[in-house]
Length: 358
Image (cartoon, rainbow, N blue to C red; front, side):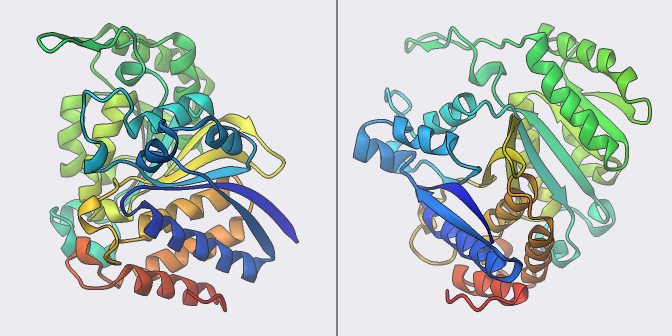
């Protein structure tokens, strides 16, 4: 029996609830497909600040680096919301990305027929949409220095190097080549020097992938096209800030952030696959924490990505993906229904054929 080690970071708010559901679903898949996971639970985010005075304790980062993959819940909440605070939960996310060298965030977006009523988009607009947003994760405004605010003036620095852009753009090309061979590169090259570098890199790599059709799009026009003609996109690759905004906007296509998974990848490989960090796109939703009504599907979908990319268990990933889609018939509060976290989890586990108790 294969055995994997996964760093388990439940985090804050609804993070512990949805990540626990995802963890049990992975265990259920392991029972059916003959593998097991050793879960190494570690503090992160607000709870880590309370316990250790820092959002990402060194021991947590070390445990992540020693694992085959990382499963993360969510971080943040009202208790730690002061923007002037020297230590904030979100620093854990930036620290994980930089410390583990996770430079690409993959966010799959699909228009599930079951969620047609939950989407603000008309059926004829969203039907058939199936795209992948690839967001650069360790450069740009979020990591640029200097960064300062003195009360009257603030500065952020947008900086990219050619090598930073090349690695994520090349991954975008590789992913497009394995899908429908269409890559949309998003920038703001008419205004930003960093975007002109980005566009130059795309054109430099383009000859390596002659089967992939490439288009360049300015981020403002792309934001409109994403919700007006989403079906024409295959793989979208873009820089950090643009990718953050566009991928949340894309939740309108699916119907809710509560069903949006993600994978953050680097170049490191293990004996099982490509090392990565997996987390739902949604936040910590502190207003519903502890009430048992959070939608666990984004976390479960992220766990399926983990099985596929990092643990080398494609059959289990397929089963979990199928169970995910079946559970879309249930409606948690974010989808206008009354289903509970436990009910959705149970539906997924039963679909897998689990005997594991919730």
